Image (cartoon, rainbow, N blue to C red):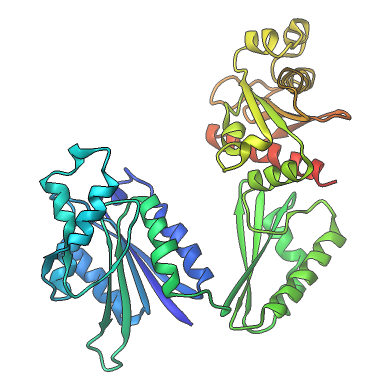
Length: 417
């Protein structure tokens, strides 16, 4: 099986100023192309660290992907470090200059002497085009000096995520066509502890054929069961997937929430779009997190109409039409209030469905009857309005994240009935 190593470069990654999303995205693509990611390494903007990481990588990896440090400023040292590593001199490329002039045609101030240094390119590297940025990707074929004479393909790309993604999809992927060596299938399960799930499917898991492995990936109320086949026919993986689904459904038809590896909000959006239905949200304790997830993906305007973040009771009353008497009698975190919030926003925004949340996210505000972590969620549908109370932990962010996911899972289950 082909091995890949990812090296991300930048001080900002190691001090936590920037979250490394590049590695996760690249790893997904590499798996799809038939590579197993052997390691992901982050290093400082330091020539010695870059060289050390690259030395280790080329000894065992068929493909080494580097991101970061290709800008025009003094702290961007990756290109010069790689030139020394591969014994390359920099030559001025007029085709890169023409690309820059076209890219910045409406921003002539960007075409200064620093930007012009992006036209310097290693003479012994292959240029991989970057149509959306100034730094072009570089490719080398490197043979290690070890006895095995192992050959690695080394590709250096910008660290800006949308530039890296464009290069991967348009310039790198054509070099490595998708392989059938690796197959992944994912089932998303909810409503059961991980340990109980493992016991439930223990006999099936123990009987898995050679080359097929199961991974448990739990997060905030969902457990993703990833079934991976390495060097085995896709049909064999599908057969085991079918057995697992039968086992789960026989135990409890409500366990399986999805049979593909997509975010829950994407699956909700697809279900709504397929049925030509719409949704709105009225959020108190979740503060707009449900709305953010629903509209973060392209095409959400087809099903998502909007949200009212009704944190203060006056907004619940005057915008959503919640009864002042119920607010006084039952409190904002209660079944009557959350039902009226869901019905109110569905009526206000003229949608088919609506989600509402109201809870105590803490760290203050809890009582013996309603401790921190108490969250009421309601789903308003054309037929009726459902409401349920959940206890979702003690940490504020944990509570809001879990409430957001609970609400979306519940709506998905209602849509798929």
